[in-house]
Amino acid sequence: MMPTCRDVTRKATALDEGALPWLERMALQVHLLMCAHCRRYVAQLRLVRRQAATLPRDAAPGELQAHVRDWFKHRTP
Ligand SMILES: [Zn+2]
Image 1 (tube, helix red, strand yellow):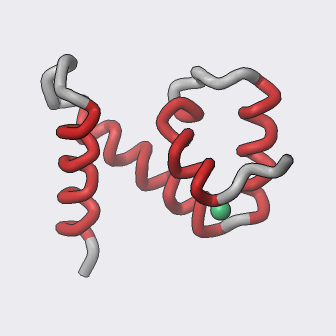
Image 2: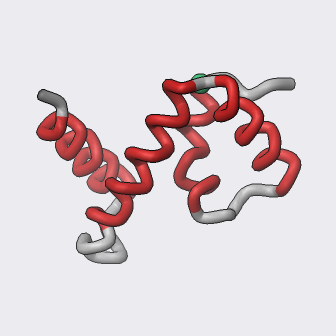
């Protein structure tokens, strides 16, 4: 079954880390080929993750997500 945009956004971090099984990775890559929205999301996530690398390694996932949301908010004109 094809992943949805929701699946892509949920799994984008694991995809970026190469932490997904190849079948799942391929399915997401096919989705990215067809979906400009998710391509942009994944590209921006990579930028954010570079920014977030300055956070403490033990930051809770919730805190990291809040940071990412803030970062997007401040980037949006
Ligand atoms: Zn999509």
